[in-house]
Length: 311
Image 1 (cartoon, rainbow, N blue to C red):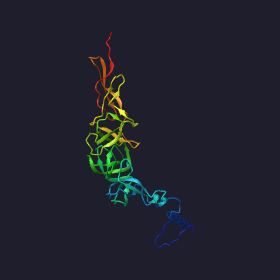
Image 2: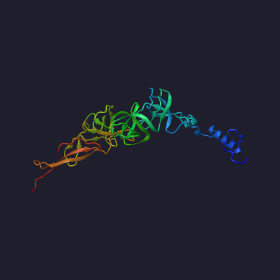
Image 3: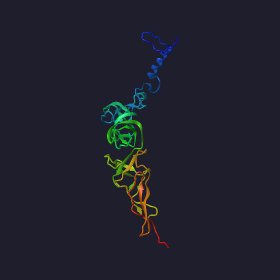
Image 4: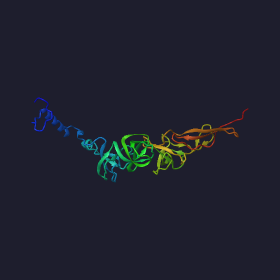
């Protein structure tokens, strides 16, 4: 049959289907029916950016609530076709660090054990606990399915937020985050030696945040011990004594090894003052220990050289 066998027809026109058109339709039907081997991706009913999630948190989740991604049901090994076409993420109460950067925001209320729609990447509305008005990123709040928490780093970009701090409704972009998520805290007791310290979270201004204490924050990158309470100084016959007081504001972050660390460098001695004692003719100095993001207290005067009388 000549002519274009694929041209449209009008109401009342005789319907003449060419072999080309008929065979083409059969091919499409076979493809839609999953004749090809492997997952039938052509039948996928979902769009990139949205997903189905099952609420396994043990409690109902409101619209715009947060669920950490704990897995997928089914896996590819269990059902390759369903894995490619209708994957259902397993959602749980957000936990740090397991769900940092691995969460979804529900676009409808999802009862415990039920499956619902959620945003996994792209624009979303949600509540964010704004810790600092200058924060531009957000991520999960540990144990909280109602909101995200702001920071200097996070997997979500805060596109819009009202002025000030506190919990606010915001517009965020999931999957667009970056930066370093630095927190701040004060030592629960004066630090003089050891591999770690325990911090009471606070704002950069030192105001208590009300969050639980964070233990096992490493002070050195290799996680070995430091000693600033009885440290030697070249040329000094005595040990210098310094401390990081409970009033110090200490930055800390979750490193790639999954542990809490203070950022910056390993502690080094920094001379803060020097003099020659007129009575003893001794050359003396004072020092602090510089941790990069914070410093220790200043030491007392330390002898580093004993002077002698000129001939």
